[in-house]
Image: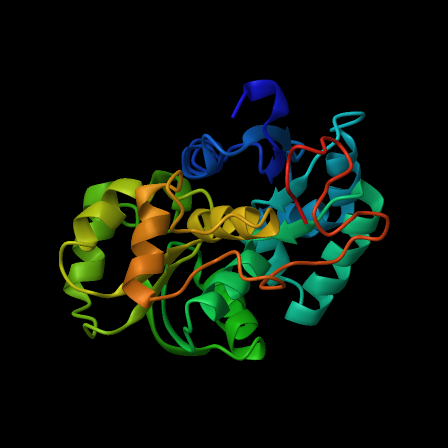
Length: 275
């Protein structure tokens, strides 16, 4: 697909997040062009204060795309949406979709979409968060109807810091947990690099491996009617589809209707099929 006619995926990320853009960009290439808007730097606020402020300013941050017409957008910060209930998250994303004129999904809701698409009902939560935020994440999934069987707490050295977890630390701590062979693992946190760890852990067993960024890419492809096991799909997406026997792109799976948009067109380019 020519660069000028490829669908446009907007990604909203925290200012210090180095993983979301390269991982999501790799996962959706060459089907999408990825465009980014960053949350503001908020000096003086602790983590919870920053996450709360992110939800307040999210409409403005999406507004920073200005006249760049998007075909879909992902809010690549799970932590701020764990402060909401799943229903509250859906309501916020529905309001944002109306404003943007294109489907908007939080990474948390994208995880729910993907989990349902692959038939996951139970999770092992692999979390690099501070304990209070891990507890909020746990509560979010349980409230959404996904049972959390275990929590594996991931440390970067001696502290909780998603941005600083190395591949070696992530792989070692997951292996040390001795998880069931048939478990579905959810690696939460869009700012934790996971690609190399997924490749390593994927050789260990047939476990289903989900991440925030992987789910965001799955949802984005589904929103445009592109199957996760399509010929242009990233190997991690194809692996997820093959391991579960599921296919993304089933009509209506994980999609939000946006008033004024045809089911097969974003209204930007009639040659690009979107929903």
